[in-house]
Length: 273
Image (cartoon, helix red, strand yellow):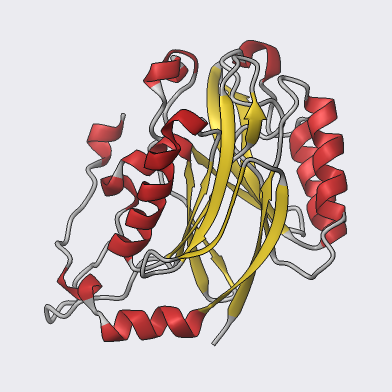
């Protein structure tokens, strides 16, 4: 069964300075010594968590997307993280899933952080994105989404004869700018999402103070399907590669088949407008 190498980039971000962030991140990514397949950057990696989209938003053919295409192709990796995108007069906190061949998918953050007035500046998404890599299914999420378990809940669609289906995905990725003052919730909820969905979880956060004076301790984590921490790092920059294996995941699902007993449900698109 396949393995998947995932590199988390926990880093300080230059406040609202795209050029400086892209230079810094390119150097970090190209310096990764081992072979890796997915490189994960924090939320709004080119600007920090800015509530000034009019000044920093780009189109989908803008500088940051071109940068992602170039770095992904050069390093032969899948590169992901969120950026500020303008489309049809609306602004989105958009996660980009960039493939080395230049093709990409994207996910617009569903849950906007009203406490920081993100909901006043950005438009919420209404569609999940589950990517596929080497037989792995990956659910892509952004920061505040972590607090809302229904949105990410592993679906267990029943077969016609009433038997349970198969798990919808194997890994959840959260990219974040999550302040240190609420890091207990960050760490606890990453573990909870892994346990309840019987999957791996990767949470990638920034470090350092942002332009609003908020300190971020990082605490990026890789969590296994039992909720046990495989990797974590606090208070300093770190570029770390973790190899995930399918065998333990399948063994846990077989030994503890809780997913089969999950309640079937459907998210009504009418309520997401």
